[in-house]
Length: 248
Image (cartoon, rainbow, N blue to C red; front, side, top):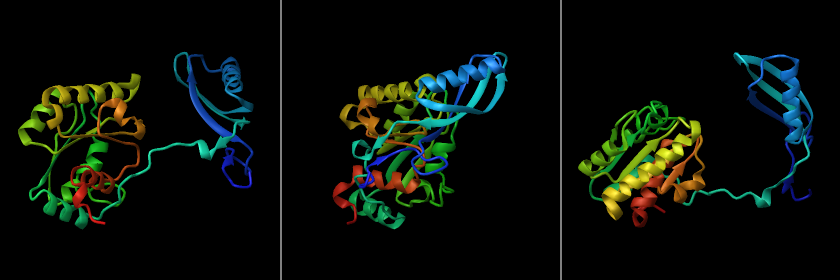
């Protein structure tokens, strides 16, 4: 491992392979439940394994935290992720790019679609208060930003985007049970494609369970994962909508 490309998990000492795993089993709390948890951990390659925490979460269900060692190695040369292909711009650079490139305001709509009522993500990106020390897109004077809030239906969003002549539609999805976020995103992409074709706005989705590499598969232009800041989104909008005008 001299080049540092082959690594193992770190727990108590470097390279000891220790990992921590949490899960729930449909078994009443007790010794039999802990034995089942250890059996599962062993089958996953965690050996020796210890149950360091367990408690009942409902009748017949137990939550576990298991700690133990794995033999698996990670080859960093085989790790492939989507790298950011555009520079991060300041608010001033974003405003200048819009003013000189569009000669009008850049129109942005944001919403949570379907039954998702969790607006914390879309609010963090759009509201002036922002996130992680960065102000949201409402702060950018060259953007016309509308936050439609939660539980917006896809037809409503398509109609509003058409009426407002939106340049970009930002959708946040936090609820992920049974892959609802993926299903909703594919429905979104299909609806915009059918209603507006090539004239559709830029479609950007984000949430904690999205894989940024899934954009093409989901039919959207860009996917953001957890921890995304307003500045990253603003910079992407410039990159995608005004590429020839973005500052060096």
